[in-house]
Image (cartoon, rainbow, N blue to C red; front, side):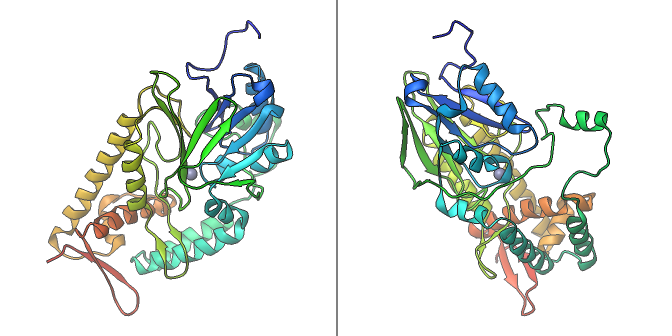
Length: 358
Ligand SMILES: [Zn+2]
């Protein structure tokens, strides 16, 4: 035992900050014997691994003690370092469905991007606007512009909690253990439950640690629940014709999480908060309700294309934000269509129109 002040919180969780991400180390009562469990592998940028190891060391822990890394979802900033952990001897566990997409890396990203573009055209996004966006995405530099002075580089790499200091990398990886809803993960005296929470991504998950005492259960929420911002639903296609309706799935997952009795929020972005799970859920759901009410309001005078709804929502939207804003508006439309409050019609040429029923 050391007498250094512990960096672990009351529930023996070590929050680790890596650029804009937070990951969490959960050591067993005897970490040297039983190991440490990690929630999310962390983003992979220049210096990320070193920053992660330094934070473990500062808490008296060692990377070789990490036995299991639990993945919330296969976004680059959450699992970029997964393969690195595997090389260190840790086991990777998570949703197989989720990780198989990550494994295909760029191929899936490109295929998905093509489907999204087609879908945006059908939703009424003007072709010239779309053309500009495609060009900007294609010409986006893969690495930061060079040359760069040492001072510029130092400034870019200065630790910040709002952004990653460098470009994110992602190495494809395979899971050692595939988890299904309700599965338990045990490391020494620690027990966590895998909760499937599709929405943010199709195979998204959160992890729950039951209370060891009256302290209340902890929720490791990845991007499902964030303290300051409302997580963005993505656009995902299972196939050319089958789209995953992400926001309705997200809402169902959130309503289910609300019944789990978790109190303490350990999010993938933003500092962990005691006793804040219900607050974050209420805030997110009420934000969605308000936005969906606005969509209904816009449709009161007659049918609109999804893009026309978007243009009413965000009249001064810069083109660079179109993709993200489009995904959000489609999410709200999906929720209204599922509840029967909006009817979606498709013309023979594939153009979509929305209207109030009746
Ligand atoms: Zn994410």
